[in-house]
Length: 465
Image 1: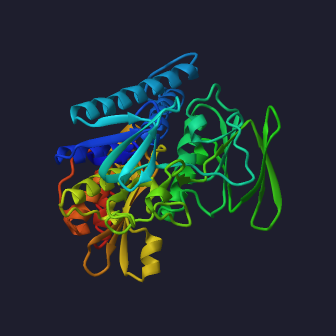
Image 2 (image 1 turned 135 degrees about the horizontal axis):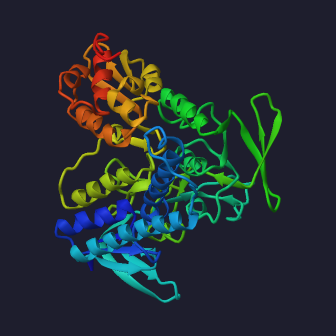
Image 3 (image 1 turned 90 degrees about the horizontal axis):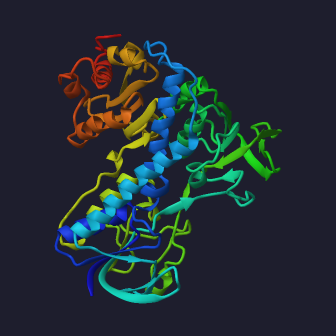
């Protein structure tokens, strides 16, 4: 009998298995695919970042190298090589997870894990053979898969999801992206930089609508420079594969129908929890109306020895959120008293400029009736950003009007995905805007923009604008 069985080897699953093993538990992990790492490492975070980096190199070579004094002729994209490099990056990462399993003496069971009862999991291999394993504690970490609309037939040829977008055989001439969220903007950016025309159809009145609205407006401005066109407040009513092209029909705010034709449609309207084959009812586990595994504040299901983490439970679908939850549950099982502050889990969009945020948005503070002050600093005024020709975007700091405590930080600009960590640290220690404004930041760096935004929030004291 195992002390801990983890179903699913994505960032939440493999991290919880490692932490469990570190705490002395005899641990097993079950993964239905041939490689470990889940969506994130195989068809999500890692491969998309690899293609984003490759496409950004190409975009810079065509648009900024000449200004830098670097002259190149006959630039072209070798898409098969770009995809092959991405595949190699993925392989290095998933091989690394395999190594970590061996290092931590975690048993890996390949196959679909389904409940027989609350302590027994049946592992069914690809060839149909199966075996049962038993565990005192079980963690469900089965993740999510792309969501769609009932009338859209995702044929994986012309009408695709993020999975197919990571292994295209050609650069689309005109890519229509349904959904203006994180995944759509990232993958749209990849092909927009490589020369595709990109049209975004979004039901809401802004792109990346869950983030602070200033971020969506700024990102939209930047993406328009790449040639993106946006159809906001448009409801998709039909998507049709016509052979060599695809047709998308959508209704605007006035109820009028518009038609957009392209050669590929990327459906990126979010993701949904994945519990297929889990046979949760055999263990008596409750699922919510949205298909999520129901958990309490300790991520425990209604069955006391079974927990669930990551995309399959409530909250933001983020790899690092799943990792935090994986550690949290392993430590809870071991009798520790861990803690997660969900407000301070940062969100990032890996477009260029990057978008990163932590804490409350301005819209949330208004809704809650919290008095706040705002400090902004544009990268246009940053010496480091001018040097690297990355002047789009800004840093926005929201601080409590009376105490000056930082309540939210929203950044769009160069390397903000890395810069947001400073804001997370500050907010974990309940820093004031004045605290950050008084700390020395190396010059010239992008992070000075955070200091300047904090100065701006503190009696409008920004120095360089």
